[in-house]
Amino acid sequence: MDDTTAVDPRPTLTLQQATDMTTELYGVTVNEISTLSSYFDQNFLVVDKHGTKYILKIINSEESKNTALLRVQTLAITFLQQHGLPVQTVVPTVTGELMRMKETDCGHGRRSYCVRLMSYLPGNTIAETQLTTQDLYHVGKLIARMDKALQQMESPNLSVLKNDDDIWSLSNTPLVEDYLSVMDGDPLQEVIKVAIEQFKSYVRPKISSFREAIIHGDANDRNIIVTPVENGRHVVSGILDFSLLMNGCYVYEVAITIMYLMLKNHSPLDVGGAILAGWESVIQLNDAERDCLFLLVVGRLCQSMVYGLYNAKKYPDNEKYILHTAKNGARLLNKLWKLGKKEVESKWFTDASTYSDK
Image (tube, rainbow, N blue to C red; front, side, top):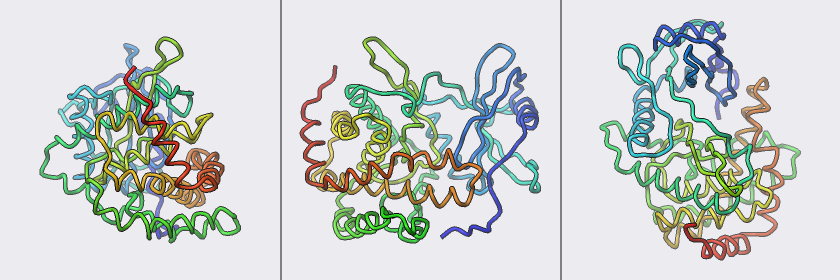
């Protein structure tokens, strides 16, 4: 478990510091600047003198140490953008770099932070929008297209995406047990314990049958931007945040997407079939992957809730943002667990068979 006494790695630049950094590194004359919410990093919305909007991202000092990984993440963004996926454009510095290590003092000594400036993608997050099931079908399809494209990415540093100790990898769902004390006194703790035991006995033996792939790893409801089109429908206009890019498995991406997009949907059980159908229009899941989908969705929900509570206690000033999942997560986990694997998967697979491109 992480040491709660460790130095806070989060950047806390002032608006003036961020303005100066943007001008110095990118030659951008800042007309307006404001802060945006983030889990561990610091994001700013920057508007230049021409009215062009950018996102300035300052990555926390801990993750900034792994420059090889950050370079691969940056490569992935530019690679996908070149392949027609709706991701941000990384803006080069005045010296032509797509990312820059910058030493600065945010009030707790000088530290080195990785800095990126990226284009601003208009629209609303899925967290702020009610999507139709046909919209969700197209979300699933686009996420699959993205992951399929990522398999063509080439770099001598791709090995950095394999981290067997990553607590956010669905392979490591049982590591949630090390953090369960944050739920002492909560009746949901028992549900999570049983879910983890089922993961160990049912999913673990089948992981060798899952197809490995480079995946986004965090296609959640705040990392997908949509814009409205005709008849109340939406299209995906942006996929954000590649900080959890990893060498995982295709089915993990499906499970992660389903879980997060269920959270604020008025009919959460209708989400799985739509996402699955869209995904499988590009990449068909095999029998083992389908058979574990329910427990993988539940596993990600357990991870998000438990790690969220842990980090909210560690960083109480950012509690509202960190506990985004917890608000509806308890209700969703109870509902899924009460219905059970057989009933939920039956609905998902039946629903998935009814979709087509429209």
